[in-house]
Image (cartoon, rainbow, N blue to C red):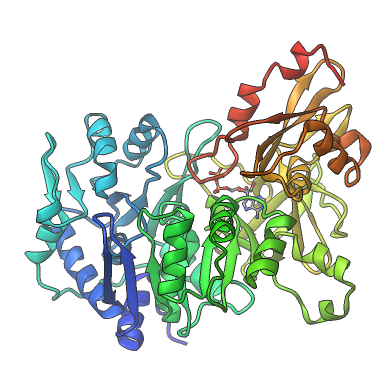
Length: 539
Ligand code: ADP
């Protein structure tokens, strides 16, 4: 066989050659919709590669982005990786100090940003000496006044022709860089090779994974700065799917408008996004066009959310698990033929797990001594991964992560069954240790979310004078609904073991979320730290 390198540029070249008239639709940061095709996008990506050359970007240099999901960001992905430089997506929702740390650690040579983030850029620029150019992703008419010498992306592009040939190089070259959000310690960079990126794209396009096709319209709600929008910007041109990029409009109303207007068939995002969208659909009594398949991951999708999306809207839910270090797709939930004959309850138990292991990835669970535990769906232990798109080392952090016999420690606690279905019990740092036993905060949250008055629920383990830790349940009520702490506990009592029952329920207007939209448990534990100590261990 021929040996051709697996390169990111081949994806956009393929989309141009075979899906040249397929659309990419963007909700612009400046307002309004922008439409063009994969062919247009490929042309502009080649022009942008020339812009990078003119600005002195070399192979291996980092080009940072602080940007929403839009066509300009998409072009930066391909221009940068395609020319052999590294596309470094920075999460603009992080604190400015973290943004400055990440840009500094990566030594980004150029940073491109959406207008929304001008203030952030102005705040961090003095702390980012490596950045030679700040590029505003907009046209001359919208270029804001700033004390910084900003470049205007559309002006830069207009000055270049598209006579650019993508270079060929080793497929192990780095294509992209993403930092974990670092809720504990400093963020760590994961460097994705071209090879890993391509193999991951092939894998997520399998029918039992995301399964994008040339008949689909896909809208990644998950941001392009959150593990490369889970690989969709690569998988969509590979499959020839129409791409809809929602820009800054991530509220329920803006998303539903695009789902309907563009007849979106596949979406992907974290559970909190769907909670907001569902609230909007219920309030307006709306039905989304079908078919609609949604990939939910990043944190646990509760049974209540899965049932609501399927029951009320007819949306097919595929629950998946992954992390920055696994590119991110590790497991995804679809049934096997044999499940058709199973009783509803047993089927449902399978359906609500994080899903089956993707080919290309291996998972195992081990005990504290590193001994492998049985795949019986019950034993739980430290989840470890290895595979074509699993991180073997962090960027500029020699010796990290420490692999266990070549396996990456995910920091999650999980079960596996004989069919490869994985169920997340908790994160190692969130699991609650009470009187020598373990309590899963994730499972308690799932049950609490089944109560009709609950909009959002979080469970954290707090120091307790007698039991080491005890669970506290924090609840945000649905508008127009009421429930007391006692009613909440009664609801849980019927569904969980007695000693799992939270010792208290606290009602809040909101629950703090991380920069990637997950429950910010470290913060919650800080807020309520002394709760059981002060109460003298009540309960
Ligand atoms: P962080 O959340 O630290 O910013 P990641 O986005 O890489 O970084 O998150 C990875 C973690 O998210 C996983 O290790 C796991 O704990 C959690 N996670 C991802 N998907 C799921 C899921 N479907 N169910 C439960 N937890 C999940």
